[in-house]
Image (cartoon, helix red, strand yellow):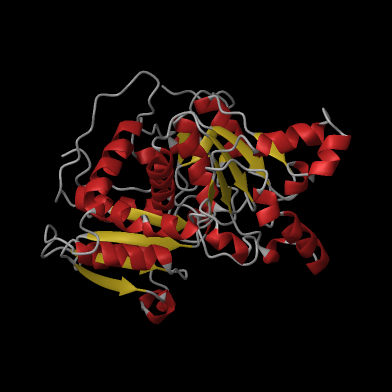
Length: 404
């Protein structure tokens, strides 16, 4: 079967048609989310979480139980042999003796790739540092499909911390693959990393517009009338074009002072006044938890779907578990012209790379000593290589690296 035994480390691991087929299965699973089913009887899922989680861990565990399987869980890695220095590789090789699938969340970027490399059972990435969160992207895309009737050629704004927010990193690529017009709105210093913007353009011809506050997008009506035809008026009109506004938390720890944080926080709060400029059927989305970037007054607005969005995580993860375990067939249709399909990763011969190390201080290779540096060729760029774990792109010491 199409997805049986596969890992999901990155949103790039599944083709567009595989994503859509998974969503078709999620539609079927949605009918069983209250009563459950016995398709995974005898199978065990391990949720291995080195970081706190509410929605992701609990929805995976609930999904497995709804399928009739069992769950073993590590909700606090400090209470395990990790506290004694056990590596990711050794941990997953022990867990695979007890479980048929592993869902891992870890603060180090590339950690899920390590788990997938060393485990013989399917591994699902539930967030590896600021790198990716592919199952969140799946439920976000599924939410848009359910609410808007499709995924193709939509206009979506990503708002908040776009530098460290792993949910928006994966989502930006997921949206671009389906032809979305993406707009980025973030505080200065928390913009989408340049390497991700370059990849969006290089691989999907996606060139997002960028703004530094909602003030650049939203003005009051009097100001619009006074400055008709100005950039601000045009920006306000832009807000009315979004099919979805995806909000993320602006993290206080990223700012040098509380004053700077407070100023940024106020500039990214979505209120009823802000939504007055949005489409009547626009979606307001958020991966949660929220702090104060979403006013509680929005909860009654039919466009505010973030709790419904979280609920969609159950049928999506039921479908994902059933597909990877081979318990339900996934009917993948023939690819269309322009569809994304995963390609083999071509690794650079390390003997040619001298002692090149990943420069990302949060890369797993800089924390787990048994991992040697590994690099892959960057698609369509001859003089760059990328860390095989965290995907940090660096100049090749060979210049235009030979792929022979």
